[in-house]
Each structure stands twice: as C-alpha cells, then as structure tokens.
Length: 454
Ligand code: BGC
Image (cartoon, rainbow, N blue to C red; front, side, top):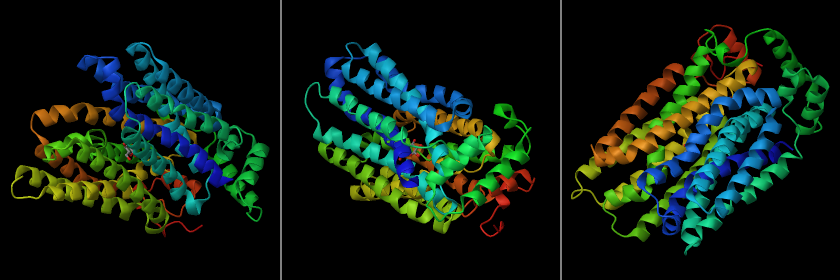
C-alpha cells in the first residue's frame, strides 16, 4: 500500500515537471495561432510559478485544517480542469487563467505530496520514498521535452496542454483509494482512525501499536504549544526554517532552472548552430536528470543526506566554473566539453541538490508547524525559481554567460559551507526523534546518524 501511495502522490511531481517543461516546446506552435507581445508572453509563461507562489502561502494552513489527502484531491481536480481549459482556449487571457489555476494546483501539491509521503512512509525508506516525488518531476520534464520532438505541426499545442488532464484524473482516482495520514489524524484527535490508516499502510507483521504510540506521545508533548506561521519564529524552530528556506535558495540559485528552461539557448551560446542538435542535447539533459535521480533514491538512505549534498554542491560548482572558462575561450575548448560539463552539472544537481530540499523540508519541522513550515520552504522554492527564470535572459544579454555561471558556481561553494554548518543528518531517524532533537535546544546541525539510538 505504501508503494502505491508514494506512486500516486508522485503524480503531483510529474505534473509539476510537465507543466514546467511543456511551455518551452508548446510556445513556438502557440505563437503561430496567437501572436503575443513579449510582455504577454512573459506573463503567460510566468503564470505557473506565480500561481504556485500564491498557493504556497496558503497551502500549509489549508493542509493542516482539511487534511493531506483531501487537499491533494482538490489539487488533482484543479490539474485536470486547468489542462482541459488550456487545451480548448479561444483567447490568450484564457490560457493565462488556466496556467494560473495549474500553478495553484502545483503549489498546493508541492507542499501536500512530499508531506503526505513523508508522514506515511516507514523510517528506513522515507528518503527514497519522498524522492519518488523528485523523480516524478524529472520524468514530467523529460516527457514534456519529448512531446516537443514527437508532437509537431500546427495547432498541436492544444494536445500538449490537454494531455495533462490524463495524469490529473489518474491522480484523483488513485487518491480515492488511499487512507489519510495517520499523523494528521492524531493531530486532530482521531486515534482510532489513525490506527486503521497505519494498519493499511504497513504489512501484517509490523508492530503498528509501537509506531502509533510514538506518534501519540509526541502529539501529547506538543499539545498546547504554538501553531501557525508565528510559531516558526520560536527560537527552537528557527534553525529548521533556516535549513528549509536555505536549501531551496541554494537549489534555485545553483542555476538549475536557467539550464532546464533555457538549455537550447545555452547550447546556442556554446556554439551549436543546428536547432536539431540543440533539442537533442536538451533531451539528453532531461535524461541525465532522470537517470541520476534514480541513483540518488538508492543512495539517500544509505550514504546519508549531508555527504550527498556536499558532493552535489562541489560537482555543480566545479562544472559551472569549467563551463564559464570554456565559453570565455571558445577557440581553445572543444564544444563537446561544454555538453559533457552540462551533463555532469545536471548529474551533480540530481544526485542531491534536486531531491534533498524536498525530502528535508518534510522531515525537519515539528508536526504542529509542519504545514506552515513546508509552506515557507515552498515559497522560497517558487520565489527564487521565479527570480532566476526571469533574470537569466537579462543576465545573458548584459554581463554574459561566463559571469552568470561563475555567480552560480560561487553560490554552490556557499552550499558546501551551509551544509557543513547548518544541515542535520536525518538519515535513520524517525520524524519524532528529529522533532525531539530540535526541541531539546541542541543545535539542529549536531544531529548525526549515530546520535539518536532508537
Ligand atoms: C526543482 C525544480 C527543478 C527540478 C529539476 C526540482 O527539485 O524544485 O525547480 O526544475 O528540480 O529537476
């Protein structure tokens, strides 16, 4: 059941990636039917991150109030409706509205889905299970790039947009068969339903009562303490906020979406003249992103979060710097080296910088502030996503590619320091053990694999 749950919840990630990537390939066809001014085009493209940013603000409190599963079902309905409307539009303002609705669905699901998986998964595979969400994002991006290769021809953009309704419906249908999160049920005082939910989620030999008891004790210890956004300012909670917001800041400022959204343009700057080569190289990027995320899922619960993050940031910094040097001296450096370095950059991202912020934001907040805490992390994700995607073309036209990539490299070096100084090792700990450590007043980053004996 837990695998089915992780699979269904991850459809939200697929839709996140699909709706991010599809505009890159649909836009040239769309522009033939609906010519747009640059301003309208920019707003239409940015409607998804904008909707997601707005939804992220409200997602946590809504999810805490109505339950993880119910809010995800609402998001699934929005995904389906948004895709159908986007496929049927007769004017551009309708597409802007549809993309705003899709953005809201992504924003709700980007908080709800990792939270739902994290609260229902067994400790030993929690990291891998939440990473299925990131894997699904990469599949969504890859499939959207591939539709650009396969679905060509006038008016076909309608099919590209409309196709999103299929996973939307599957998501809704799958959720109908799943139980609510036992931890949320305990938070709301429904211990019997929590037990029934956990029974469905675990196999027959599992000691459900012991696991439930840990959840109940934790909820009792936390009862009567602050909830909502204001509680995030409490001295014990602040370090968790810093880690979650900081990891998403670093994820976005590592430059990932400059590559994901503008890969063909970057290849153009690196001297690839043929459009076809550029699209193929872009599909290559999508493939490396996807394949390395699978490797990450295998390593996260084995190697641990901190070593992987250090490895990822080091790899991303080195490759960004090499590309910056290569494009400054184009005559001395073969162009295949730029492609190879971009692939290595994507692999460094996908091994840690991609999945771990999503995994850790679902682990480090105490239950009573998990909703608002994850909302805040998601605001950081979408806010900085918007900044990078919006600023990258301006930076390319101004200081240029080498300078911009050097900035990304320096930020990745900062990521190594941040990981070593601030990020806890959550591998092998129950959510309750992490919470206990946080509330004990010890520095969050002092949590180590061996430190808590269960
Ligand atoms: C990020 C997205 C990014 C994607 C690439 C995700 O973790 O949040 O902004 O596009 O990874 O795989």
